[in-house]
Image (cartoon, chains in turn yellow, green):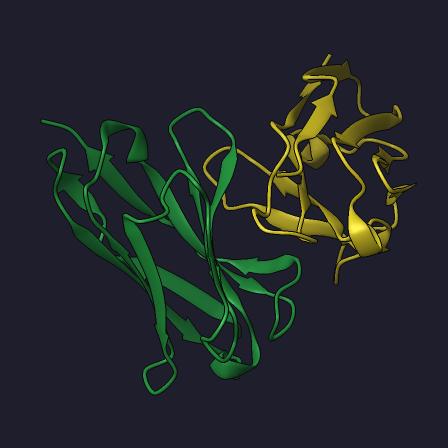
Length: 108
Length: 120
């Protein structure tokens, strides 16, 4: 099983600042089958990124992602008020399709 | 519009059984793998099970293997999750999620979920 560890657990920033979220895998995620999701309270997760770096349909370009093998990063260039939420990474290369524990992005 | 609507959740005693359904619309159901994901109250996301578009390839999380059964009915565009021997730790919101391709892939569309509470 591939274990995904996200850091930090909580990130406190102000609107307009840059956010950098990390996701580290316990073993190589083949084909860069790594996705990022955003979840707001009371809402279903929304796909942001797939294939480690490809933005999903309708996702603003302030969201970007990079990485390969075991180290992946989600960057939000300039935080908007609606970006404060919990972010999860997920690998879908091998069953079980594990999620990270999440990073809570909160307003400072 | 692509839509997934879950149903079947409720309050059930430990050891009981429950069947969840997910009605899919707005896309060719058989062209995509489907998944169940759960989220316990205040906790993170946990993948539960996946089934390929053809229904021939199925995976389960270790935590539910042998107790849960995923299935799909292409004629009714419906995904199901049969849950047996339910435990208190199975309490969660259960959501179905569409994969990006027939064989699997990222989860691009999610339903709103149905709550399952296992308690005596």
